[in-house]
Amino acid sequence: MNNDKIQSSSRNRDYGFSQRAHRVANSAPPADVASSSLPASLAGKLRGFIEADARRLGFDAIGIAPAASEGVLTGERLDAFVEAGHHGSMDWLPETAGRRRSATALWPQVRSIIVLGMNYGPDEDPLAILSRLDRGAISVYARHRDYHELIKGRLKELAGRLLAQARQAGAGEHEVKVFVDTAPVMEKPMGEMAGLGWQGKHTNLVSREHGSWLFLGSIFTTLDLPPDAPGQDLCGSCRACQDVCPTNAFPVPYQLDARRCISYLTIETRNVVPREFRQAMGNRIYGCDDCLAVCPWNKFASTAREARLIARDDLRAPSLEHLLGLDDAAFRALFSGSPIKRIGRAKFVSNCLIAAGNSGLAALLPPVERLLGDPAPLVRAMAVWALGRLSPADALRRRPAALDREEDPLVRSEWHALGQKD
Ligand code: B12
Ligand code: SF4
Ligand code: SF4
Image 1 (cartoon, rainbow, N blue to C red):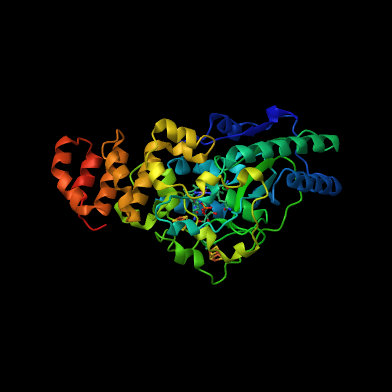
Image 2 (image 1 turned 135 degrees about the vertical axis):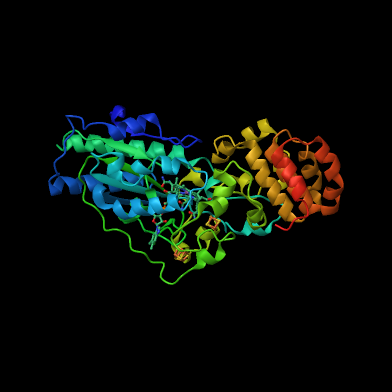
């Protein structure tokens, strides 16, 4: 395998597009890369190889789209999403929109896109936790190890073996690039074009075979491979996902306003969660699965076959009391290898404080009171909100003394807002 020809990019937590991938997007085609169409028999053989090897590597859904297949409509819809401000504080979306809008804008030499899906179906009802108010609900995708590294490793392996097969079969020298989640690639429309399923009204890709629970990744290649037929929209008149959404994040089907989505509010934005969404969050402390879980197409879904995508027992229903007591070192130890580590202790504990405020449980008052003196303003601010919900009279009694001491404007505004209707 020639590792120099296998590249990937990653979105750091500031979501900048990596320099390496940027150079790729603007690079001239290497002189030794074959560009003509492959003979049908050879292309078919390579396709069979991809199919078999991908399954061996643990992928559950495999499809191929011609690189030129998506573009205008997807690009226009991305523009509309950004123009409406639906990306909120995810500035990396507009910043990379030029490359993100189509595969060929990212890499002009690409001929085919191989889209792979890995099933992460849960082994229990993911919504059952929502009624256990002393517990925090972590979305299914984050109850195990970070899927990015797992999938990226498998994609690289598949891509390397594909290049070797192509060379051996006489297709000449080709190139590949692998992407999962973090690159400026529109994975859902690509998955639809490659026949893996369709973008449902909640905007995620739904599969007839796997329902909502597919992680997506892709291999871009200069190989001209036989494509699959695009997926067809099978939502029909169903609106289960729209009706269940606690924050009405997509009042118009197929168009999500990320600023209203609990996944964005608990993971992507480092800012304080606006008051209007706090009660609706319930005990969701990291991500949200409601719109995925109610989809009727899940009736064909099965549990993840990849052992590393099975939930950690301690993350299925963690106690809020325990999570509220995490200091920085304990937070990092608990979430080592987990995507949750990336949001940092202050944001995570502030999410847990909102859940505590929504619990109605007096037993959570002692940890909430302790966090009123936390060094992180975001934590202090949500401790004030939680106290105001669990013990309003006590909160009002403490307010004058607290305002005498408190200098941070965010925390002060929470003290001032006590007693206001959310
Ligand atoms: C940004 C992002 C988010 C943001 C914004 C989500 C969004 N819908 O845009 C937030 C933080 C909210 C988020 C949340 C989640 N995410 Co996310 N996210 C992404 C990311 C990085 C980019 C998505 C993107 O390009 N958004 C921009 C908008 C414009 O794109 P779009 O949704 O495809 O928009 C289309 C529709 O709006 C449609 N459209 C617009 N108007 C119209 C009109 C009509 C008539 C029609 C038919 C269509 C249509 O066309 C647009 C273009 O195709 C992708 C990874 C990637 N690189 O693709 C993961 C990704 C989409 N996320 C994923 C997951 C798992 C989640 C969560 C389930 C996590 C969780 N449990 O909390 C939630 C689901 C929330 C939801 N309902 O979408 C998976 C989805 C897998 C799948 N099967 O689809 C992805 C693909 C990551 C991965 N590699 O697996 N995510
Ligand atoms: S993830 Fe939750 S908040 Fe976001 S759109 Fe789906 S149901 Fe609504
Ligand atoms: S819940 Fe219904 S409307 Fe939503 S994605 Fe599934 S089939 Fe489509």
